Length: 173
Image (cartoon, rainbow, N blue to C red):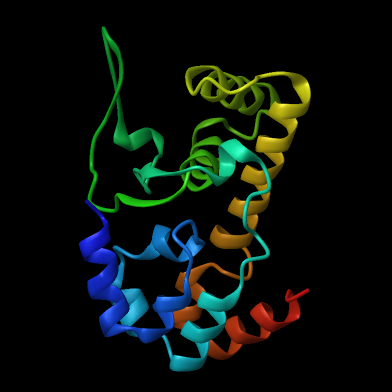
């Protein structure tokens, strides 16, 4: 369902042609006004980095994500949680929704984060031992820090390109 949209974006923004399917870029893809207004240099740097990509198999899975997974977009029903507001949905690494959810829904409580990741792994038929939970939780924390409050956070690139470019170049390995 996402392939046609992704191809249209790639036609409009050639830098996106080299961006892999699981990139952080796709989490932001439905916020086209931000992408359109990036300077060419910002967009090139933003598309080229991949050092915040997940290392764990569950984090690397290419899936449809909600891309705005926070408590206000979750309704508790008798049958469980119901997600609403899919305007930012896209296809990318699973870690992006998990990272956003654990940082928006778990009140910085390590036990709640652990429980969410453990439940996700079990529901996805992945091993859910201590090492697997730690690996995916690490991927989530790195993804969130890198793409929502760190060097790849697109609002900064949009509002202050020079500042953002400096941060992006400083974090390149």
